[in-house]
Length: 233
Ligand code: 4GX
Image 1 (cartoon, rainbow, N blue to C red):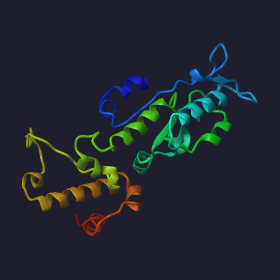
Image 2 (image 1 turned 90 degrees about the vertical axis):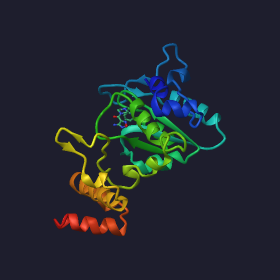
Image 3 (image 1 turned 60 degrees about the vertical axis):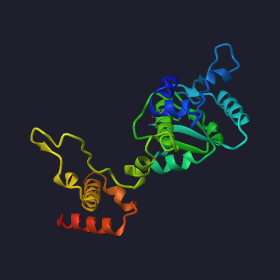
Image 4 (image 1 turned 30 degrees about the horizontal axis):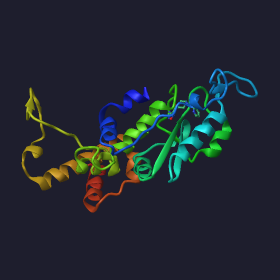
């Protein structure tokens, strides 16, 4: 699954262009028993299985040995702190990141002594950490200069500005009675910028008011938000 994802799309192209290097490590390659076991029954009893610590420690040692600069170890887990655009920006500036993907009920607690950050992609339970790791990788990769064609569009991305995106339209100007807002056809770039700010703010207020508490708004945006809140827009 991870191999397939790494060969496709934006991440695939970034790797081809050598803007990004990704290695997959199979924990079974770091086992020593005949059955190559990576999991075992939980101490104290109960259902499910727990990932054994030694194969994980050996894998992390092998990864560290491949690099001169520090390797930041992430554990993908629903117990982690929620992954955000800010984390994508921060992690993207680190020399090396290892993402530990568990299955079953999780990892032996002692593994956390080797983990720098426990990361969740959202409040739902998946069957493994691989999809979360691919989500985190994608968010990091598309910010690497040259990976996405247009650096401008990455910089202006919805969450980089801390607000939800404004509505987008393309040709034709009318599909039946569904028309593109006149302001976008006006050629008045000052007005278009203001309309987009207004739409971003309106949507954010409506759908994600929590984002407004930490959004860095400029003077015009604070004025617009005030007017939206007071029903004057
Ligand atoms: N965001 N899962 C990890 C096994 C597990 C459980 C506990 C370590 C500790 C998930 C998520 C997620 C399912 C990946 C359980 N590993 N990961 N897996 N949501 O649901 O990150």
